[in-house]
Amino acid sequence: TVGCNEKEEQAAPAQEAAAATFKDANEKAAYAIGASFSRYVSTTLEKQAEFGMALDKEIILQGITDTLRDKSKLSDEEMIETLKAYDTEVKAAAAKQQLELTEKATAESKAFLEENAKAEGVTVTESGLQYSVITEAEGPKPAAEDTVTVHYVGTLVDGTEFDSSVARGEPAKFPLNRVIPGWTEGVQLMSVGEKYKFVIPADLAYGEQGAGSIPADATLIF
Image 1: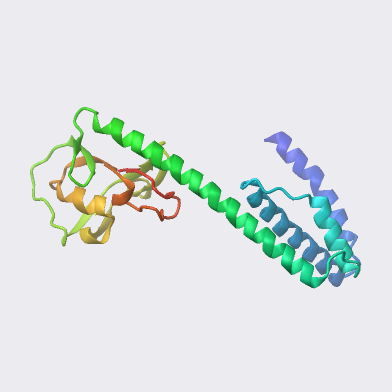
Image 2: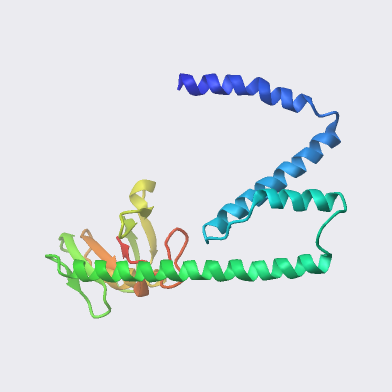
């Protein structure tokens, strides 16, 4: 921690010195525009690199410099045509990556479901929902039209937690027919006071679309 503080203290005068080199507010604004644009370009390049699309930053800088000096090597028509072609290429690479991720997730989910179905105490319903009873209790069972109060923790099959009423410190309350099909079916099996574990296939959860941090075709554990 001390080392970090020392670095911050050393960096501060340098930053102040850099700020003092601007002659006026317009010069500072001009620099800020360049810096902001550079951040945008860097972020875009990082995302595209994930698809295997790598561009040379030096060539990008050359294009910016040449164009600002009215010395662009491309006409407006050539620029538009080139960018359209590149955009198509990026979209194709992104679609290919998404397909590969989806296929991988589907294969992992299938393997997980097949293995979990063999575990002791697991029941598989006709729809494909898998559940096991952790704590039994005597009490009424809800209907799909009822409003229920539930404490839960939701994870992906790799253990990544994506939601938790326990972490929030209060249970969730909702109409049972307004949630994912796996919950609508599964919670109706429970008596008030019981604790279950659900393993919910993607088609009973968020399917091909996913939701927030939940990827497409993800099997969910509650």
